[in-house]
Image 1 (cartoon, rainbow, N blue to C red):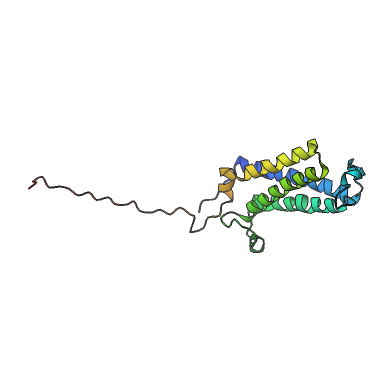
Image 2: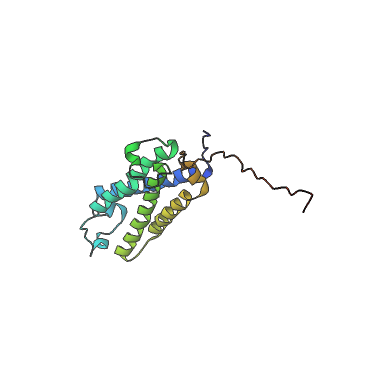
Length: 177
């Protein structure tokens, strides 16, 4: 079987996922350490009318779902290990689970930013940038190069050398009745 080389899309994808992870880890740690939001100039008044009395729970969600999870995905995005237990939640069985989980992560990021903006009733340049990052990761994942790199070759989706159809033509005899 021919090995697939990483294309520029794969390197861009890995860098984008790493950028997402680092930003979310930074924000999540700051919100967990200082649930008032003061350390990152996030007024607690923004939470008025929400189910949250502090930024602790949003910080934990941010850290785990959008920080740790994407950081964890960098290794499998590069090396594509076969981990059957993790693969069990892969709904796209024709693609490596790292591709699918990165798809999940980009969708979670887009939803996170949209819910934030709906709850707060406003947005910032930072939120817009991370929302676009989620869309960018999603687009990169859906490029032909990324899909080809993470596609799993199985007997059912591998191109098989099939013999050409033999076409026979009927020859009419030169003598017609």
